[in-house]
Image (cartoon, rainbow over all chains, first blue to last red; front, side, top):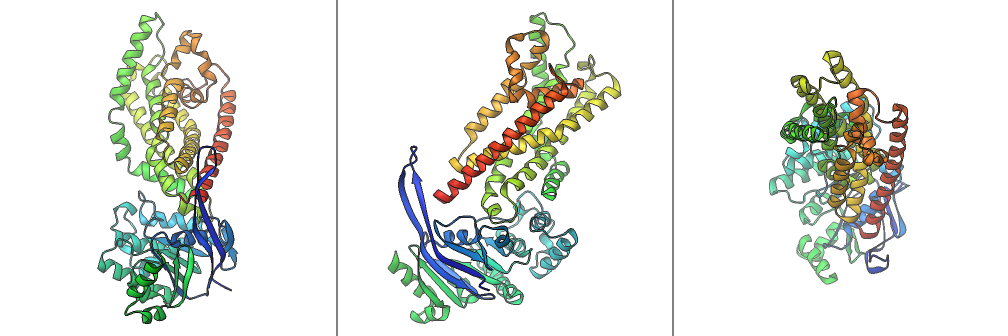
Length: 250
Length: 260
């Protein structure tokens, strides 16, 4: 079964005046179709405003498509069945409650995803060891540094053993050592767990080190879907190749 | 959901410092208000007997716990993450709001009991001795879940509106000031024969501010059977739940149309 499927996804945002008439409409995503197979690690990249985050929000069920369909592990996005099968980690939005300890946040999230108390405790302990966040469990979410928080966010995203991990710019704003550490963590952990990864990032290093496949989006349309190595070979480096693609399509 | 409510509640009870900081001026404010009230009452030639200090402490505690800015902000921030989870934002919001408000009412309510015990002369006409104090504390614990649930629903309404229109502070101001003006403060005048403000009794504000405070002091509702007051509270809660649902739909539609 396909892990992630986007079938003719189309999303149009509208701005209306006080009479309810549409005064402006923006086509954020224009008929995107792709599939990601179980265990695959794919990058989903594009310039600012290209439609990456909108696509991820459509896949996660936060947004409903104007046309087309998105599904996770065969379940339509936005349904509880689909929600149980993916985890979402974002550099922009926190899954943790800032005024509670990390352990409390993880306990609550575990309960939301239907884990029993004993299972929650066991899973939190195991993840804390694997992701090296044992020292942060007793601290409040709001007191963690960005690097520390992102490791805890990872634990929160995969607590319920999802088959798919959607990662929206997880290294955003991190300093070089923290970015490197998180990248290593993601690489090691995703490979060991066999989870499917769909990653958006503006950092070519994230893509090179994590993803064998790259999907490139520009102006709401998919303009490249293939091995990351192909993109790298098209110019001197992946970064240069991406800059060319994105620059051409602006 | 229960776990979320429990942790929110426990957080406030275990770490009450932020609430206590906010309440530092409460005794001064309430004592001043009581003095003003007693002065007005003497001027109007009304009789003694109303425990103004206790009444103002209870109403101020309720007003202070209502529509907390942090609570609204927390729900707004949690809106998008909640949409991608198997449990609805509304359920998470009610649990979070209920836990937080219940914790706050318990902490401040406890302090009110201590404060009243230290200044018993001011409320002795109604609550005499330790038995009276214990009864009042018990009645506070009885109304606490009702107040916490109402506030959780109202917080959801505000958070939904905030997500839809980008701000809700003006509306929050109107609601909290309406609660202050129409739900408490002036209300003891009813007991003094000033029938000109009798219509206030039919507003939801009085059911959620004046009546709970009055119930804590006397053990029954003012001007109606306690059962009838509870039925009215249940009706207002049902309306609040409908408003919270409508507010959520508005926020959700806004996100789908404009992208947030």
